[in-house]
Image: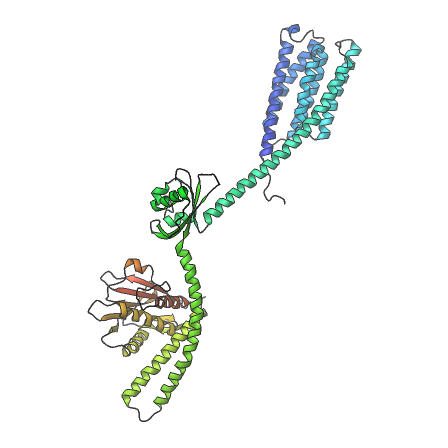
Length: 536
């Protein structure tokens, strides 16, 4: 399978460094040649047959080596060109020096072997062999030239043949070795980049996991903490890296020590972080014999919310089926009421009771329709309502079904009309839930409940508030309001406020609990500024 990662430029940097060392070695050769030519004569080089030629070659080779050195330092040049020009210069100088000072010929040829091998690292095989042939030809020309003018040293032809073989063998072996090294280096570089990239991906995955993860070393100090762990603790800016686990959570550190000592894992939920969220800890070693431990912190609330979601789904199907079954007896009661209303012998008081029964049947049927619509996620049928008049009608209808011992319900609306967009059936059901809760829980001991429905406008949006004069809602409970199945009553289902909030959302409104400084509770319905259904 081909790698998805591009090969790095590391190999090119290595070759650049080798080319620089090759040029530096050529400077050393030029300096050594100058020492031979300008040194104490025959002590180093023997008798020079052509001193002028040797001096000219040396004086030309020194600046050429310096120029080639600076050329090799440039990053915008092709390395093969620098190597080819450099090795050709080396061959020319070796040819001239060998002819000028025949006794240093073997040493110059031996040094040339290294230059040819070094150049083969940067050239193709054909070019490398051509350079080796050029060097062999130069030695052959110098040998013949020396024989013709009688200045050649007493050197056998076998030496020339051995150097020629060495030239070709050196460039071939060096080229093959360089190819193998470059291939191995490229493969190692690719694997290194892939490993680094995979490590980065793994770290990114760990950091983005919804499960909190802490990496703790042998000193119980946190070396890595992902985003979920940081959010659980509440440290969003400072982070957790470098902190002691015992400083972060003494209970968690104690459980880790127990697990390391005897392998016993206590996975009961525990309070974690500033908000004391319930988490379930799990431990595992990073490696089999490693002292580094990964601590997984599963948010217990996520598990409960998943279970809650499954329960809501089941309850939705059940409530839809139950609401469908309620319709049949409700229709029978409504039909019986209609028949009784047709009777001519019914007193006026009884007719008033029949009217209340008929209204409550219609209201119950509306609740059934709302529950079915909520289960089917139907859109609310928003209408423009005059909220002040609607609140007064609601108070009048609700007051008929309650006795003075239960409480007092009144309207605290402003005198001017206020228009809002809402499904009237949904608003009726929401207000019924809120008022009934206020009557049940919003009373002081020994007193009747006093509930007020207030209509007002805040920040350009109409609001309806249901207020009571009871003890209020504690802060610890206020955060749980609206969650399904959460209730403080033995006889409650915990679905009333949840249904009220969901119905508000389906109408583009919000339902919020507002604490009252002077005592009591306030539930505020904030309606949309315009029709959310027409602008969806």
